[in-house]
Length: 115
Image (tube, rainbow, N blue to C red; front, side):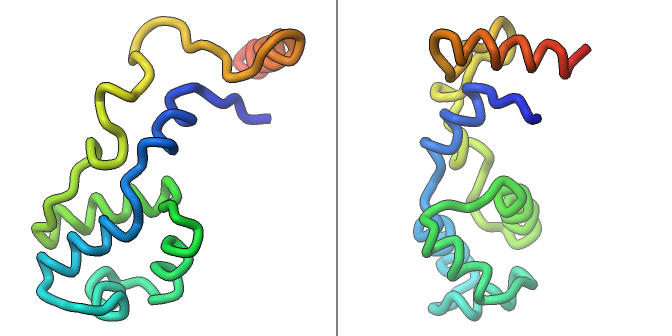
């Protein structure tokens, strides 16, 4: 079992769109196609197409893009994906995304998992 936090839920809702991210790479690299961006990133064009189709970039893709953006000089930061004002607090309790009896069962399961 994996315990879900509100930070993950909020961050995914605030995520920058793949279209915007890829446009930043295109502008910086002075290219016009996703295939050219894929070559520069060292990934398949199909991966970029999947991000566009799903309208989101998975967590592993975000980390990868942030690293490549640093190397290539693309203006992209973690705040573009996870705005500070929309993240859950770093300290203090995280409210369960579940309600009622389901919340109590989930919290108990998470506590048991942590022990």
